[in-house]
Image (cartoon, rainbow, N blue to C red):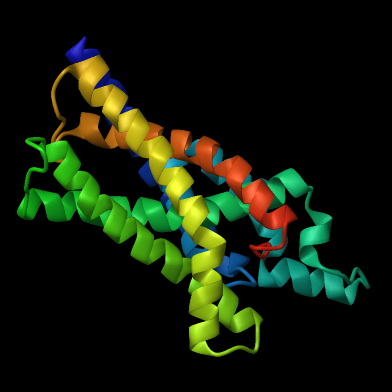
Length: 232
C-alpha cells in the first residue's frame, strides 16, 4: 500500500510541476496576463491542481491575456473582460487568486518547518500550522493588495484595508478546508504525522488545496456578489 501511494504521489506531484511549466512557458511566449499578479496565480494553481489547472488556464485564463484583450479591442468587443466570463468562472478565478497566496505560503512554511520545527500542544502538526497560517495570510493579503492598488486610485493604507476586507474570510475558509483535510490524513488515514521531506506529504497537500478551493469557493461567491471583493 505504501509503495502504491508513493508511486501515485510522485505521479501527481510530477504532473503538477509539468503543468506549472507548461503554463509558465505560455505566459512567457505571449500569454502575459492583463493583471500582472495573474502571471503568478495561474502557474501556482497549476502546480497544485496539475492538468486541471493547466486546462483552466488555456480554457479561461488566456482570454484575459494582454494579447487577447488587445485583439478584442481592435475587433470592437469592448466592455469589462469579466462580463465575457461566466460568473462561476469569475468566482473560481477569484478563489484561485486567494488560494495561490495560501499555496505559496504553505510551501514556504513547510520548508521553514523542516529547518526550524516546533511542537504546539505536543503536536508538530499544530506547530506547522502556525507557520502555514502566518505565511499564507501574509502572502494572500499581499496578492490582493497588489491587485487592488493598480486598479484603484487610493492610498496604500486604503488598499491594504480593502485587501484585508476582501480576502480575510476567503483565506480563512481555504485554510479551514486544507487544515481539515490534513487533520484527517494525519489522525485517520496514516495515524502519524507526515514529514515535508516525504513525497506523500506533498501529494496530500495537493489534495488539501483542492479541499481548500471547495471550502473557499462559496465564500468568494458571496464576496464577489456583495461587492466586497473585486473580480480578477
